[in-house]
Image 1 (cartoon, rainbow, N blue to C red):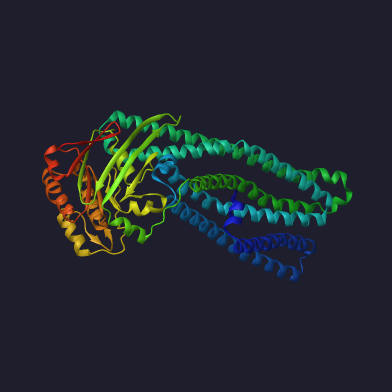
Image 2: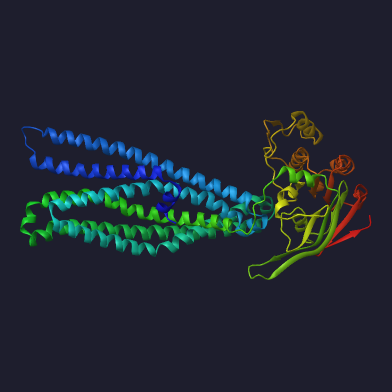
Length: 544
């Protein structure tokens, strides 16, 4: 799909109106030339040709008004289309994509396509509009040229067509460099994410800082070189096309008069027409790179959308009655669950399972195990963020299939080790301000943040303090099952004691089911009903 296809697909009535205005604007522009040539042929020192002067003012006014409408409307149409596409992509990411799908697509690519690529389409829209407008004007001007001289009309069409065809041929050699530039931009965005996300680690190692700086510099230079190559090639092609247009003027002035005697009587008018259309022709040529880059950006965006459309996932729909059936569960069982990771060559790199495991309502389970043992994957499996390669999940003997998927997920509130903290209470339509303030006081954050209109005033805090805000949000969600992955790791000793001996028992007393990932000493295991251990992707229950 190209730029014009996008307009056709996303708009209809407005697009047709826009084309009518472009037609009128192009015609009025050509009429300016007609009036000027007519006035030049009748000009005298004694008086002004009033009729032609009035016509001149009218067509100028029509041209100005139609141009204003065209550029204003075209910009609005394109930006509205971009907004619609972004909204569609956001909806499909939320409703159709699973966590494993986003892992494969890559955050950097999604960011790039929804921001940089979309902005390119919007940025180039004015240039494309001007090029289309100029093309229509050239068509009318060339038709007017035919009323003066058929020979001049034929030569103009042949020379202009040759120039544009050669230009388009040169452009095909440029497209690979544009694609390389876009790929470099995605890589650069990914590395910059590492720079900002891993800034603490970079500051602790000058070698790491040196290497990532060199990597950013290399990728940035790669993007720069592709950009420079693209611009130089486009400049050369533009100069070539311009030369064709000036050759056209030379043919009209120096060659045609040698072959057609009657032509000499109209050479001034013909030259005026040619000089008049060189500017619009240049605008058409200049618009081709914008059109190409816009098309590439559109294709990238729609390719991403197609990937989301092709995901083999039935979008889970939340149903309150189904949720209420699951909410009062007595037991959740996991039978023969397995999940495997594969590299780009489809070779297995790691896997967990088979896992047989049961969670009873209201119990507290501690999950322990070393780094890389599979704990994070296990949590994603039991929350149905990852679809198991084998096995099934049952809630009171009811199999969790695609119909119950979202309702099952809604049982959980999780603070993962790599949790994301929102400053706003998304998803909570109502809340008790007094309760939130009490939680803030309980988490000892009174001097760090406040809460108003569903927004925390400050979340730029230490990791431990951010986890405390995440705990507040989790408790406000009031789900049946809580997962806290290494929540106490960044807390001070006193708050760690509070977490294990006060907060967790309090939640248990509310009949909440707790799954606690911990690396802390076994002295805290007394809080748990059961302790399970993950080792090499296998799950074992151990004695406290």
